[in-house]
Length: 113
Length: 110
Image 1 (cartoon, rainbow over the protein chains, first blue to last red):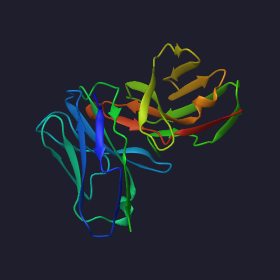
Image 2 (cartoon, helix red, strand yellow):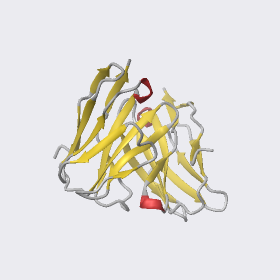
Image 3 (tube, chains in turn green, blue):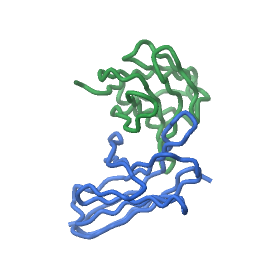
Image 4 (cartoon, rainbow over the protein chains, first blue to last red):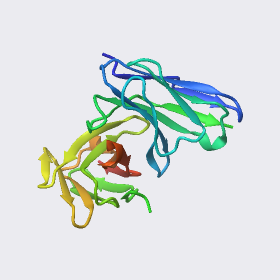
């Protein structure tokens, strides 16, 4: 089992460009999450999907969109990247939203110039 | 005010030392509490849950003080491999989402 995988690992974008971050899990989890991590800020929830077919905003959703493609995959899209979106992005999953242990992917380091 | 606050450190300690971190949370309705560990440039992983009566896992002891709204983590006999960032995490009622503190960095020196 690979657990939670994310692609790409690194990305540099210019302001205004768009891109999609991919996340997949093979643990048959129902819930999936996207976080961003900035120095000193901890992880902040961008969007989450409690189950296949549903998505909800987290703490910092502005500038992002998500798609829960199927039970395994949850993608995050930046339509028009801004320097403020420079961050490390983590995808996570767990069996249910009230299950405390979330399993994280290795992260995507994104720089927007 | 941040919902979960931690001293960012770094805490520099020699091998074998005992070190303690505290964390405060602002939402009195918070239901569950955890410590996650994050190695440099890696993803966070669950270290341990924090129970009201306090709990121990080997060299690690976690305590919860609901009245004062703080959580602590004690590490005894520190190892070089304990060097990492420790994230205080709280699960609150609204949607059962996890809220992460900014982390406390620990560096254990030989």
